[in-house]
Image (tube, rainbow, N blue to C red):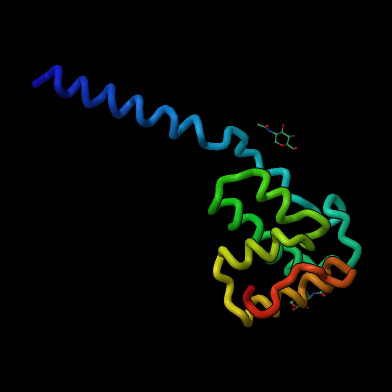
Length: 119
Ligand SMILES: *[C@@H]1O[C@H](CO)[C@@H](O)[C@H](O)[C@H]1NC(C)=O
Ligand SMILES: *[C@@H]1O[C@H](CO)[C@@H](O)[C@H](O)[C@H]1NC(C)=O
C-alpha cells in the first residue's frame, strides 16, 4: 500500500516536471511596452494605449508564448498578429471597431491589420 503511494508520487512527479519546464521562465513582463518603444507615431492616449496593450497581454496569457506578445505589439499593434489575437480572443464586432479607432489614433498611420468580414 505504502509503496503504491510512492509509485503514484513518482509518476506524478515525472508528469509534472515537463509541465513546469514548459512554462515560460521569463515572467518578466514588467517591461510593459511603451508608446515610444513601439514606435507609435500617433497621439498617446493612455486609455486607448492600454486597451490595445491589454489585447496583447490577454493573447499572451492564452498561448503563454512570448513571441506572440512581441509580435502582437509589433509596429505599434499594426500587425496581422494583432488581428489574429482579436480573433482568438473572440472580441466582439463593436469592440473591434472601437479598437480600430484607438489604433488609428495611437498608431498615427493607416492601419493594415485586416479585420474586415471574417476570413
Ligand atoms: C525585468 O525587466 C526589467 C526591465 O527590463 C529589468 O530591469 C529587471 O532586471 C528584470 N527582472 C528580472 C527578474 O529579469
Ligand atoms: C482618450 O480616449 C478616451 C476614450 O476614447 C477619451 O474618453 C479621452 O477623452 C481621451 N483622452 C485624451 C487625453 O485625449
